Image (cartoon, rainbow, N blue to C red; front, side):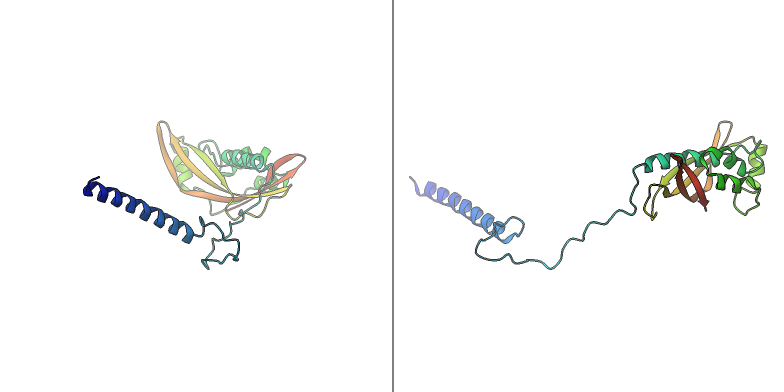
Length: 194
């Protein structure tokens, strides 16, 4: 064997030994991959710990999806308007009565003048024979926990005014908080707060 070959083999073996020593040493120093010694008690290597997992913001009841579907359907009907034939946005809520409790239906049946609503825009939509279509998203940011008979949700209502082939978004979006109650096996909207 020549001296060159001998030196090449020795260099390769030296590199291999160095890699093995480094790997063993790294594994031994890493607390997640180290094999615990049986004679000594484990010693924490760090004072920081991962935060505990966050609890859910609300507990969902088994029929939360059913209640959310009711809310989405009711609010879609309530916030879809026909200004050329409707007297006011309240007519949308009148069309959604089947998804409202008797108490809420009685409240919306009384005409109330409020500062909310489209105002002057209503007349412009009526003149153009526009239809205002609602798209409702239901969420639960900061809602109280669900119960078997009461669910709170927040809804974002995006509206689009459609005139012929033209469609224009209605700004701003409307956010409402709804409470649904279950009576007689059906979920109904009991309150709507802006």
